[in-house]
Length: 319
Length: 319
Image 1 (cartoon, rainbow over the protein chains, first blue to last red):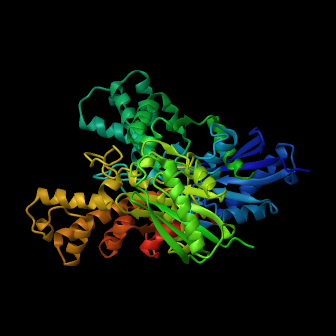
Image 2: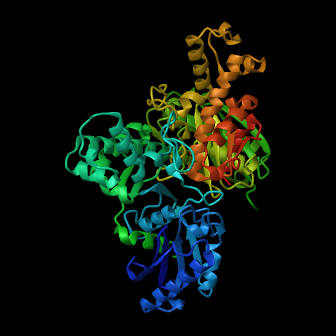
């Protein structure tokens, strides 16, 4: 019988989500385990994960023989090596390389396992089930705590020479006196246009002026606070979004010069602020891009439910 | 009998070079026609080109039946459409789209013709016969009058959604008050790091200071003059190269974050100044790139003879 189902596993810093998925992107069963209670013991984590995967397959009313494979999206997951290496948010992989693909496959009695990073998984999910269905050339940008990217060329995720292609959160957008980034360098897109980045912009600007804003009352400003303030018409918050969207749009112009995509697809917590980001982003992109692409490249937003997207993306790897 | 030969055609603003090439990159026969004596009459140009191609095949001692195909590298040549469109340096294609692939194939009795732009052809040439032999992921940067690029992913040239991918000469390297570029925008890599760009740097810097330099005696400084001055140890000229190399290296760091290539391959007139460009370029690249790629991506220079490279590149398209 045809193997008509796949398993998607989304490994995050705190939890790992597991889902059994059919060809239409329907999640038949799902479950969650902790990622952060195994210390540095990668084997213990992987044993728990394999058990949860097996249970989830059972829960969906399926047998391992019905499953074509398991796709795993993980921070720093490498498609070529199948390893998760030096991922700061995963204690069991923070200081070492864990051969996740091999260990998990072994623990699952030989089921094929494929690994990639979370942004690549998101791109695959969008192409298989979401807003990029039918597209063969697009760039997925994930605007979350950080900025990630998954680049699709001729229908395939771009992995590059070493499996690490698509680190667009770390192109330099501010060359002189740029903000320090978590990667140790300065001026990265991520330092400005992630959820953390936009909050830094607001805090810096508040400290540098006396402009009134609803945000002044708050102790620790988050991207959600800026969104809420903008919703209420706060001019300061709106300018923060304007600046963030402009930096994104300019970067998109450079990305387009590289791979000439049909669309830029946005996903992640910060992408929910599309009503405030879309216009400055699109304007800056079209102002900055080479003439041949002016008003030709679409900016679209993920159409997957945010809770399902990570599982769907990872599962898409396994087809 | 196997078709063991191809024809390469390199269309430039003034001349078009034609060569019959074997599998090892040996040019068996070659010829040249003018590109600029046909005014806006594309058909007349193509008729002359077809005649020259046929003659060149005969000159090589071959018959049309021995030829697998004709590869054409042309400014603004589009691989998907087979057209040359709005190429400012070609009078017969400056204000219109010329279906070069179809017209030339027809004029050659149905020989398959493939068209791409000159930088993509250069990348193919380098991969098939030159410094990138055996590489499947690299970025070719051509440093000529302008800055062009050909991006190779998994052994194939990246064309993107519309066939125009790889315009890396037009990423923005100077964001505020950047120099005007020929493309109508400002701050492009090409405005700083082409042969024209480096001459502009020298002229601007000379105008802005009293620093002594051999270049002060010259009326119209070219990139070659700067090279000659640097050769003589002129400190000013050396600093101009240092700046140019630094801008290139920083841009390379962003390109690497996109496609994770094994190498950046340089070609073109300005690349001949490698003794002055290599060090600042490599330093800036490794200073600017994400840690995972530090000291891992090679910068190499074309190994093809400059006179042959354009024909070889175009011919590689036809295999």
